[in-house]
Length: 151
Image 1: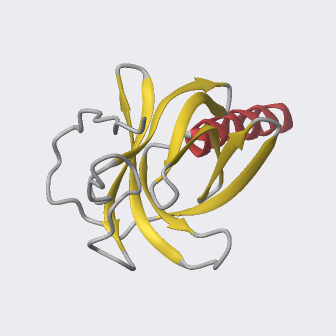
Image 2: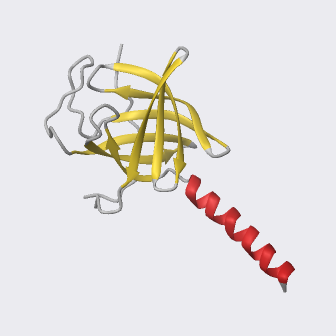
């Protein structure tokens, strides 16, 4: 019986760790400088890669990105091209729409927190986004990536 319980616990831990590694869903972005909630980002998968789209702006609903054409931030893909590597997603890019800069990025999940790391050379900056279970999308259609022009 003891052996059975230990095996069952080991299987449960493995299953929980697999579920906790999934980043697909809605996340409330938290500004790492002000600690304020700024937006809701939908993390989604398309053709084996991970993308992130701003689906709600919490502070400035009419914000525009500081990139060519100054497009609205709302409904903009700000994360693209991440690939799964164990419990981490890496090899992609993240756009800071306020600064108009693109960084290499990686992300991973720690419980109900998504750690988003933007990298520039040997430097990096982390943001910790919170799982958003209250956001209700107006459409359930699977998004198609639209990578913004940033050059």
